[in-house]
Image (tube, rainbow, N blue to C red):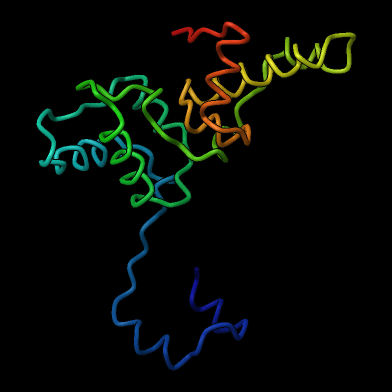
Length: 170
């Protein structure tokens, strides 16, 4: 927040501002300096020395990181990468290994075939299948995140995937 504006609005004490304001650094948010993401990601991954195999980002995963707006800045990037390092068994982190917040997926486009089917004479089961398929595609088949978005348990999601014979398409 801009503390000068907060002081003017009466939400922050002016005397406290002057105590804290020794040096002011203007650092743009990570969304304004996306060119830094590859270097930051490489540095963050290199610091994970507790793991046996040094993890690397696949080009597709790096592209997914570049497309996200990062409202939590570098700390959010670090958390996403740390989760990915823990969850992937491979030496490469792929898009499906990235656990990006659901708000990122809310901006993902819904397929036109899905939009065309809503409100037509199709069964509720078909709507459910299309919705689950869309959420899984939007989460890059991250089943934990998809289950959270759908508001169902992971076991129920696995049951639905089997019931509808859904397959991950890479």
